[in-house]
Length: 122
Image (cartoon, rainbow, N blue to C red):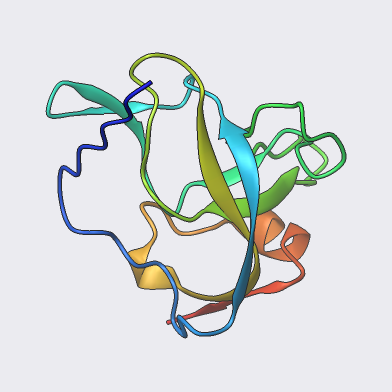
């Protein structure tokens, strides 16, 4: 089988210090995608949750916060992931220093509290 990778733009860097971080492999759900150049993409910097840390068969989805103020955030999507043809493999940052101004949306206080091993820096 031949594998072809198409790169649509430069890699978006979300890290403040790119030499100190830990990622894990995840399957990214296609439910939170945006459309970019006719492709469905989940953008780098999306805060992910859904239970993928406890069960690697669970798809990573956009983190949610309950009415009680508890977020299920577990990591941050490291690179843009093309989910045009359904859920796709990606990497979730679970430890490191993130440049808050490079995220598509600023994290909520609940998400910051849930992501104990990630430090957000302006």
